[in-house]
Length: 309
Image 1 (spheres, one colour):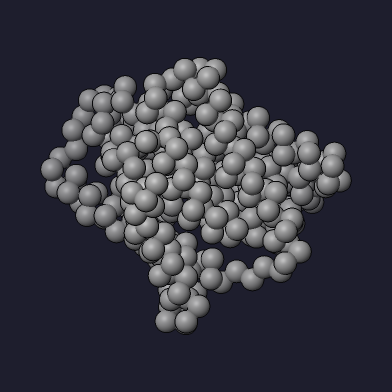
Image 2 (tube, rainbow, N blue to C red):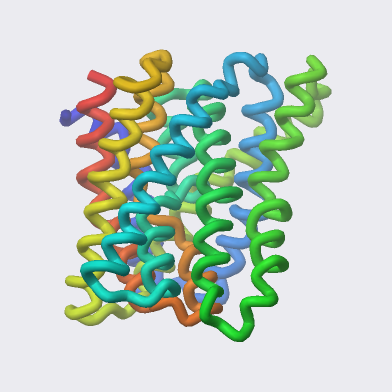
């Protein structure tokens, strides 16, 4: 267990540095926005493109894994949606926000550095397919449902398009798949450029994530309500993924390990943008994102220890 904590400690350590920098006002929010934009639009896509493009397509993609991972997310999404509606008496908009927060992971800022730390370059394929399942399907469905009671619902198509098809990381995945599928090799200068640019992605993304957490203000009542969503994200989701991938579909063990670890990641920050746009309980979504990220400092190394030992 200690070795897995030590392996993930530098990653969460950079998050802590970003948090401290903003809390002590060494870095302001404007600088944080610039770091986040650089990482999301340039650094992470370059890193993903370089990793996917140079791996044989059969090692990067597994259709059974994709179907199983998407089905697992769908089960958790439907369960949270139903329980929120039936037990908590939430509106469809609010229930959809909870379900989306429990099934869309922080794949770019936190997922990519962690997957590379635990699996090396082989982690790029499972992460790419999880991104397609969660961002292009679950987040899109959640966004549509969150807009159901909003007068601005007519704009959801544009929001979904910008959040999925025009997502730089999704675009990098698609381009990398094309390059790998046709058997092309990136020219050495291009590969070095992508490696150099992508090398800055992890630290800047993690620093920006920590700063974003420091800027949040959450009251106690909202935090208590968000604990259920956090439990579903960090506990229920990984268990369902394990049951589906390992027990039901019997995919290769490394794919099971990667899938469970990806599912155990905290909630993605971009859910808050959609929730705020449609008034889908953004305070609870923000609290769940912050709480799941804090708890993941302990839970992610534990899941890695369970799955990889």
